[in-house]
Image (cartoon, rainbow, N blue to C red; front, side, top):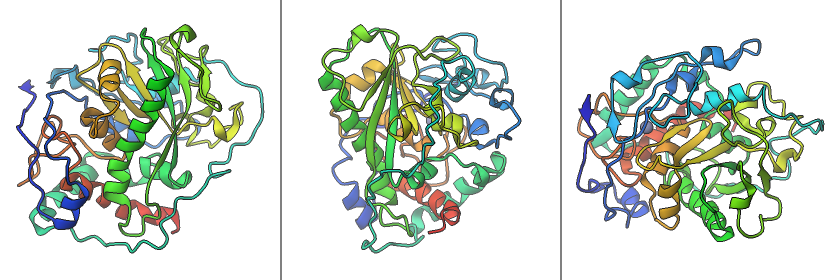
Length: 377
Ligand SMILES: [Zn+2]
């Protein structure tokens, strides 16, 4: 077991263009936190239609503020507790709960691209793969590490890039209110704005204008909230937003209707049970949990962070843990076990940076350039 590393400030960026893009983000203080290792085995494991996802899932776990070898043991056992320090894989919870959740009866086919306004940046000149020489070796090592560590990663079809391309960069969120706190209409509105800002640290800050990526920005919309107590929701729920109060996962934690969830249906593409149609479909979840304020989880299914941490950072320019977890949604790895040569401060190295850095930017671009052939651009 090793202590979570702490660092003073984010390293100064050297590349002019990126330095401009990321300008103003370097003075944020770095908070110490432990971020659970993304379950890459889950994310990269292809599911056959005939197999139950839960049977294939292997998980890693960690507790807040620590990175523990002992707690990262791979397990294929279904979660039995919602303890924050226990292994608790979000995607499995969501997936495995689909059978026990209420099922809508409407047979509305949900097209991923229905009624979507494009945000294409067709006139934007795109740059190619040309990382600064100072980080090119490190990027190469990261890529080789990811390719050699995880099985068939380039075949996985539910990365954030897939969400962006399927939705024409209009990402729909479900917020799982795993909390006993009251949430006001103003806080709910601000949360959507915060997600928009943070998600675009990656899209606007890294992908826009790079190597044929067709969108200049991502539009984030919260289409649903899930709670076990609607009385916690002060004020009117925004028109078009569904408040779910009867759908839970196997642990009894509120979730939006699984029939509308991409993490559950990206393989079969069957959203026919989603009563709200495309407007209610959600690409990812933001799972906000009481008492989980120094750690997080992230994956193709979305992000899980602490309720207080999120509420206290609604207007922050950079929400460190959320940025890190969105990085996992975009396929980026953790760096608990090793550090690429010459690079030590970046958002995906938990605790070393409060913001997306040049190195993070190029790691995302590396994924895009390797995945883009699947999109027939
Ligand atoms: Zn992580």
